[in-house]
Length: 185
Image (tube, rainbow, N blue to C red; front, top):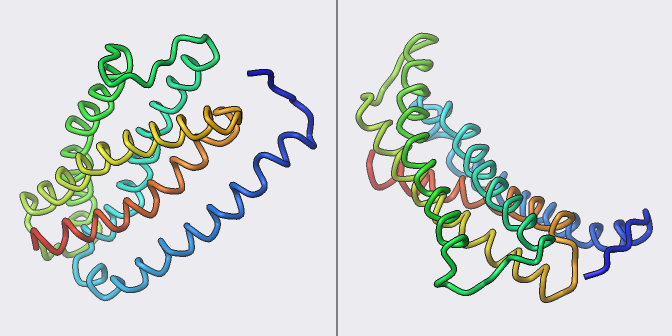
């Protein structure tokens, strides 16, 4: 794929994507507003919101960068039996399994140091871990779909995949986190 690195070409490729993602992010804010009361009752959950959605977006971005590099090197294969693709996906989920317990316990510790906690550390840990692993799996799926769509539409994945992944993971992060909150609290 020949890339046209002009301001006009990049703007033509990015503007529609960024406008659509702005609308997607508005949905995330609406969901947060709907759960405001629940968040205010459990401060440790309030601490979890930004770090959970940020970490999910970061995991997806790491994978997107690796897939984009493989794309530009000509080694990217969308074959499910491709060891490199599967290895990157498994590594993303493994990072989530190791990071999100630390995030959960860190959120509980911070909330307990700053003020009052209404949930136990085990509950916050389970919420963070279950939401984090679910988000990692979703981030892998979103990254693969976005990279494949960029490939099929002859777009430079460096321009579109990371913004798509981080914005979609923001919305999914809010939804999955509150799903975990509803199930485990």
